[in-house]
Length: 163
Image 1 (cartoon, helix red, strand yellow):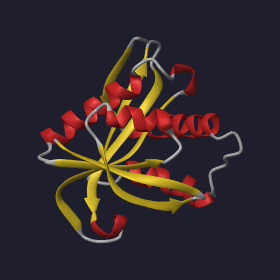
Image 2 (tube, one colour; image 1 turned 45 degrees about the vertical axis):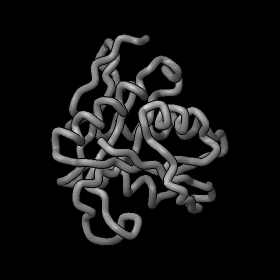
Image 3 (tube, helix red, strand yellow; image 1 turned 90 degrees about the vertical axis):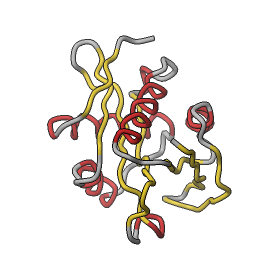
């Protein structure tokens, strides 16, 4: 496994974390280009008062991965807060480091931090065809809820688990 440290991310980590998000999405879907709305939304999501950004820092102080947790909202993010439910918004690892356990360590750290913050459950969405991500989440106790929807021209599936 690559030598990384998982730590709480701060304002200087937002742009490097977004760079990891871009590179991971581009590697998984070669024709992918983020829309202007997506690009504009990313920094705001990471800077929300209830959000907590975790980063995997590789030797040499390079951001190798990121994960974001926040208060879940009803109506798929448009409604009021759902007490006790943490929404995992993003988990990404730099493509050249895939398969080295970094994503798992990020998810484990995110679950630990969510528990510390008093959350009792966690939820997330991932692409139905992203077998690596699905295997990662299922290996950490997440189970499909049965909910699915289309987002940005992809079918995504909902997962949840107790903390």
